[in-house]
Structure formats: C-alpha cells, structure tokens
Picture 1 (cartoon, rainbow, N blue to C red):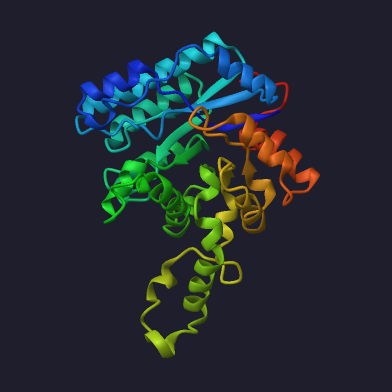
Picture 2 (cartoon, one colour):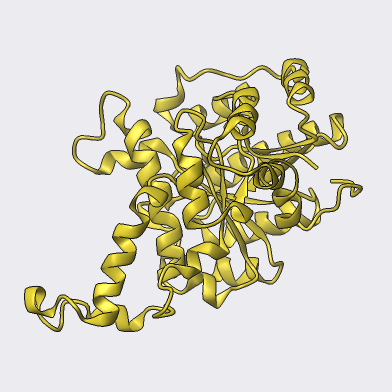
Length: 332
C-alpha cells in the first residue's frame, strides 16, 4: 500500500481565519484550490493509494486560546470533509493548539474518537518551547494512552529567533532543516520517548540535518560517556550526560525507534545518509505536496542509487502501512 505521509492542504477558509485571528504574515499567502482533481490524478500516476494531509507549517499558534482552538477545529473539520468526499484516498494528521494544553487534549480526543484521523501533527517549537518542555507533559501522557502517531514538521517562521535567519528565505531553507533535526534529539534525550514508548514519532525531511551531523553528535555523546575529553574541558563538562536515557554501547539508538519521511527531492543524497544512520526500514514516502512534487518524490526513490530494490519497495509500499498498523485491505 503506497502512502504519502507528508502532504499539505491550506484552504482559503483556514488562512483567512488565521488572518482574522491576527496572523499578519499570511495576508498575502497563497490559498490552495479546493478542487482535488489534479492532486488525485498525480496520486494515480504515482500509484499512491493514500495521502495523509497536515496543516502544520501554517499551524494554529495564535495567542488567544479560543482562536487557537477554533483554528485547529476548523482545519480538522475541513480535512474530515475531504476524507469523506474521497473515500479511501485521504487521511490526516490533525492539528491541536498545544500551546494551550487542556484544549489540545480535548481536540486530540475529537481527532481520534470523532474524526478517525491517523495521528496528530505538531510543529518542532510551540510558543518558543521545544516539544519536550515540562508544561506539555499532560498532553503527552494523555496521547500515550492511544499509542498515537505524532507527525513532527518544521515551521520556518519559528527559526527567525536565530540572528540572521530572518531574511532571504533562510528561515525556510536553513532554519527548517535545523528545527526538524533538533526535535528527535530533544524527544529522545529528554526521556519523552522512553517515558511513552508506545508513541510513534515521524519526522519530516529525513530529519533535516540530522543524518548529516549524526556521527558528529554521536562522537560528542561518546566523549561524555567515555570521559575522553577531560584533559580539554574538565571532568564536570559532561555531567549532564549521566541523566540521559542512553545505551552506552549505542548512544544514538533511541533515534532509530523513530520514522523519517523522504520529502527531500532537492537533496537525493539524503536518502543514502538516512539509510546509513536510521536504516531503510524507518524511511517513509513523503512528498511535501502540493508545495513540492509527489511525482518527483516517488521518482527519486525509484531511481536512487543508494537503495536496493528491496529497500525501495519497502520505503514506497510497506513501511508507512506498518508504521500506521494498516494492512493493504484496510479501510482508512
């Protein structure tokens, strides 16, 4: 079953609602067509059975709790209508206003119990805080009761907190890959994923810069575990490492419990690095449609010189169904 886990639909009604709630950055943003004819034709051409929609990237983070809740409910209801209109072709990772935890918990229940979505979608940063911030723990505890899928996607505008990333599109081209590399590290090293082992985390963009910097960070962890850098930095420099839920023999092992989508058609070499770090069995087809091309995403995997034929088949047709606990005959 071929499933695209990374696709977007930002209808005019959603963007207009966010603008009315104070999002001045979206006044001139493009509104996507409500006609899915072209999207479905491309899915058929790429032999994609199911596409999972998410609004993250233009998320519901506005200051007013009522407004944030209304925005999340609105886009979730729109997605439910799309799913009903095109049976078997779409599902969704629902939006929640995580910066208002009680409201996020309530919308999570609606996402699963009323709307039947595949999971929840979250940005890497919420209200200036990482996902593992202690204030979010009631949300994670509640979500863990469902062994839910959590899709994590960067929001470029959240990167402008770093000096220099507020111009020339750098917040998207460089900031987003950095955000989504940080997220799995924080979730693993904070103990969030070990406290809630049933949660299934999926990260966009092959984990951003994570595969590129994998061995550098692993080396840093090993320096702390082995205390091999004490001559340079002193014995107390790595005291923090004693509190981490790490396997000393495989300090990056927790990151191999996560899943990573392949929405990197402009960097095909990322497939090799992701395969060599987390393994092809943890890679999922992701297109970033309609912001990017589903056709090109599938072609990149099919033509990759860095994946075996069996690995290509797994990434395209098996891994996502396994992650979502679906069979090829299941209704979704």
